[in-house]
Length: 503
Image (cartoon, rainbow, N blue to C red; front, side):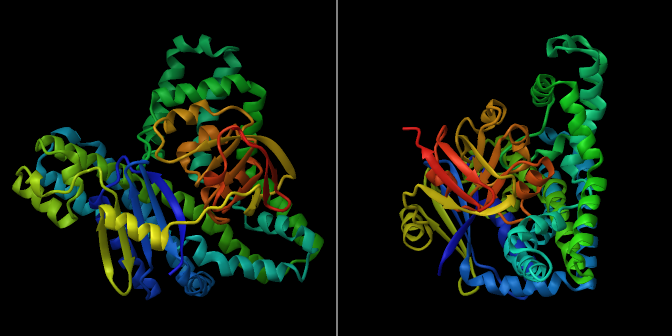
């Protein structure tokens, strides 16, 4: 079997318990729709504090065929959108309930109740999200491109394709940003010239607290905690450096997004006389991109923040080392909470060893520890990365040729979160994949390069929203580049060239 990496994240909160709570149940839920069990691998590298997740190439064609039939069926797509709306509503109700609790002072049975109610929403949200992975939408995208070539010149096709699939509605991230700019930054930068002058304005900080209350969970994930006052003060400082005029320009750009995209799209349709069939299918992809990013931020991502937090609290309350609790299955964990007993540490595996979890139709759920995990991973799954001077990916937003110095975000690195705020303006952002927590850095980026992702991934969507040159799906960018390498990003071709290595 041939594997390819789909994601990396920090191993700080990684555990067998969370894996048991997440992917396997989500894949079982997804199987109800697709009638196939996906192959999946997750390798936890404790030494490098990294979790790498992989899908299998054998499944690509089957997923593409299913995705095309599913999403181009009007009834199915309508139900899919309805499901996402219900999931987000259920998640919001669940969050409101969580906000009424003091999580550090609740009973074991309340913990159990939170998990039992939350996991139902979580599994539904994650399985629904997985159905919009690039493998499922690949055939739809290729279908649109093939049909477009009947109407538009080949050299203009990619740019026109991106224009047609760009969402006309605001994502939840854009809504957060426009509220922040409109309610906090524009009034503040109009009143004060310097950031230091705003520190004593109680009205400004009242508005910040109101904003936090509304949007604090947008960053909540396995990698990041809640957006708080410190976060927004750092963002405010950056916005003050840009000044009122640039801030107003960004605000109006987001506010008028729908009008701008529709005008551009109408011009393309009239110029090339593009058929209604192409427009109907393009609208599906356009809506899927928005649904996908909203489902992540407003749906399943929250549980990746909450569940590890609850696990940690329960371990502390029972005076049990967290790493011991993390080794439990979900069934064992619920039993542990009910019995409220200290675990037999001697019978639990040490924290320091690596683990490999494999999900396959033939063998189901397999777990490997220590040397056996490392050996199987190295022989069957690990990618072979060769030294190269150039590599390529998919153009997510085309804006000519860009040169600049790289700034890498490596999941699992100790200073990862601080690097978000230290990102130098006009550096080229390089990451395995971008996530909402990287937005402060993304807004300052000269270009974006990622290892993973398709045209509906976070990097692709935000690069189009912010008009930042972007190449996604390179597979090897973070494994090939280092900080401060001088590179050239050609968004006409998707080729990235290393001009000078930082030795």
